[in-house]
Each structure stands twice: as C-alpha cells, then as structure tokens.
Length: 455
Image 1: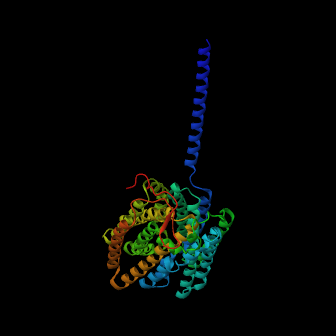
Image 2: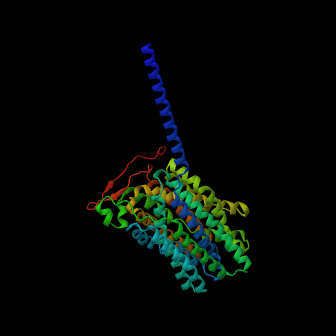
C-alpha cells in the first residue's frame, strides 16, 4: 500500500514537471516566433521614413536634370558626363569626414541631419543658378556633400540597430522605403512639368520644401545613438578610417566594390539612350526612373532576406550581372517595349541586389565603434570609381559615338565582374577586426564561421 502510494505521488510529480517543461518550451517558442516576426528595429523604420520623404525631394530633381542639362541647356555628352560624375562622386571624399565625425562620440544623428539639411538647401542653389554651368555645378556639389555626409552615419545607425543575422533584411526594408520616395519623386516632377508647361523652377522650389520636411522628421522621430560600445584597442580609438583597409576581409570587399564601380555608368546615360532609341516625348522622360524604382521596391526586401540566408556575395555579383545584361540589351537592335521594359527591369534588379547588400556584406567585418568610418571608406571608393566611369563614358560617347562607348562599358563591366568574383571571399566572416597599433595586423573579436549554406 505504501509503495503504491509513493509510486503514484512520484508519477504525479513527474507529470507535473513534464507539463511545466512543456509550457516553458511553448512559451520560449512563442517568444522566438514574436522576435522572428519583428526583426526590423524602430530606428530602421524611422530612418526609412526620413529617406522616403528625402528621396521624393531628391528624385524630383534627379528625374529632370538629364533633360534639363542636355535639352534645356544644350550641354554636350562630355559636359553632361562631367556633371553626372560630379553629381555621383566628385565630393565623395566628404564621406570620410562624415564617417569620422559620426564615430567620434557617436554623433550619428547630428552628422546625418546636417547632411540632409545641406541637400535640401542645395535645391535653392539650382533655382538661383539659372543657366550658369558654374552655379549649377556648385549647387550639385552642395547636394552631393550633403549626401556624402549623411549616408555613412545613416547606414551605421541601421547596422548598429539590427541583429547581425538580419542585416540584409534591415537594409532591404530601408531601401524599399527609400525607393518608395524614388517612385513618388519622378511622378511629382512629371505632374509639375505638365501643370506648369515645363517650368523647371517649380520643381526646384517644391523639392526644397519637401527636403525640409525630411529634416524635421529626422529631428522628431529618429532616436540618437549617443553611446556606442567602446573600441577594444588603442588603435581603434586613435586610428583613421583608412586604416581599416588593413583588415583583409574589408579590403577585399572595398576592392571589389571599387572595381565594379569603375565600370558602372550612371543611370542618366541609360535613360538618355532609351529616349534616343525610342524617340518618345521629352515630357515622359521623368517617368523612366519609375520602372527602375518599382522593380527595386518589389525586390529589395526579398533579396535582403535571401542574402541573410545564403550569403551576400552571390546576390551582389548577380546584381552586377543583371546590369551587364542591361548594357548588352542596349547594344542589340531590340526596340519598343522589349527594350524599355528589359533595361528598366535589369536596372532595378541591379540596385535591389547590390545597394543594401553591399552594406550588409561589409558591416560584420567592421568594429562597432568605427562602423560609420568604415562604411564611409567603402562608399567613397565606390563613388570615386563611378565618377571615373561617368566621365570616361561621356568622353567615349563624344569621341567615338554612343555604340562604341556602350560596347566599351559592357566589356569593362564583364572584366570587372570576373575580377570581383575572385576578390570577394566565398565565405563571409562574422568577426569584427581591427588593425593593431604597431604591426597593422588584425585582431579578431568574434566568430569566423561562414554562413550556413555558403561555399
């Protein structure tokens, strides 16, 4: 009797423990599920909203500038190539200053806000410049300085606010919101030009007002990151951002991005070529970026999630292969809807697979305390190489004609793509490395295991 009672009590106790363990496991699974569903942090969404509004402002101008330069002001392809290169990279060196200032004391929000404000004010410069090339160049330089100052601190805030295994998705969500602005900007420019009989001044004024709204949103809704983790070595505290090129993994990413950038001509050239080939009305020109932006918007988040799962190297290379396909299509005799849809589709795939993915590829190999500076170095190298590409393509177009220039661009991109495939490591380290103070070698502060499923 005693033994049976004891056994019954033991069984009841064991059942109670099993039930408690089951409930605890279910609670952990529910919590993990909730965390899995909410991977994008609040600061990322706030920055995405700011970028959305700011991109409406900037794309209103970007959509009309090629037509304004070539048709309105009568600039030659060589002159336009210089201004397009200036627009995309001549002032890129200020990215280094922006990244350094953001890392020094963790003033990411303040530095980014200064860049947003300067870009908004540059719209007034375009308005006051009239048709003077020097004035236009100065206004464009001011806009690019603003973009250069804000980009690295903004991307550093995104990476520092996101888990390492969700960087691709975080950047994808931000770029998708940013691209929504890129969709709305050309639409607004088209509507203004149609309503005002091609009054470019109206576009510049409205763009300025929208840009100011973006600055106010940054101040009100984006939290500052005032306290960053302290650097782990003396070199990290005193070193310059360029010293991060001593880190082998980051140096290879930098070299691959710069090499591919040197063979990437600006979107404006592609849109001008489409307008020449298809001979549509000039008033429709501002709508061309919409096709690119629509594809980018649809693919940015899925490609970011795919990059998190399979590794970011292959999507990055595949995006440039899509761009090469766009160049090749422009060399074929194809016309009509096939040419238009094909080029815009491939260009959108290119941006979806490279823009945010490159930042997600570089972030894990950069120390948290120098994240903005490292991203600034990467973005500067890419922007300067694209400046050379734009100027070179403009010169080739002027000297040899558009067909020969396009053929050279396609050949250069094919060679660069092969070189980048060799440069980028097949495994993606997750450690954060820093150059040592004396030897310039690297110190590892994390794991070196490759991503699951990657060669």
